[in-house]
Image 1: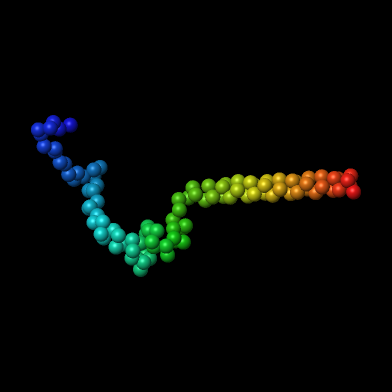
Image 2: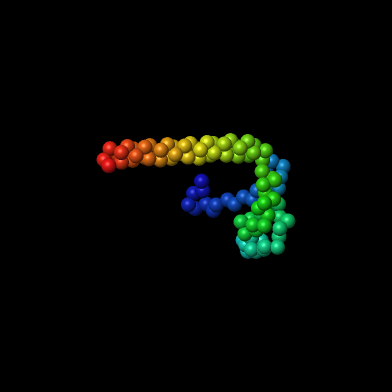
Length: 105
């Protein structure tokens, strides 16, 4: 930590783990790339480049497929359970309503 009367030391990283750091990006050129809709060949499409999204499905890691299948099975089980629960409640309601009509008519 520098003292008040000493200037701060600035260091530029030349190389880390044998790889040179990437060149600094200009914010203006990054914004121009985001708004360029004609660049469909980019390997990592941005949110503005929505034309490339269907191709991203083929580049998902292999462990996503079992995760999607298990998640879909759990979701299907929950939907079917809720359907059976709603059907049982409707059946109970109709039975009670029929009994009350039979008693008080």
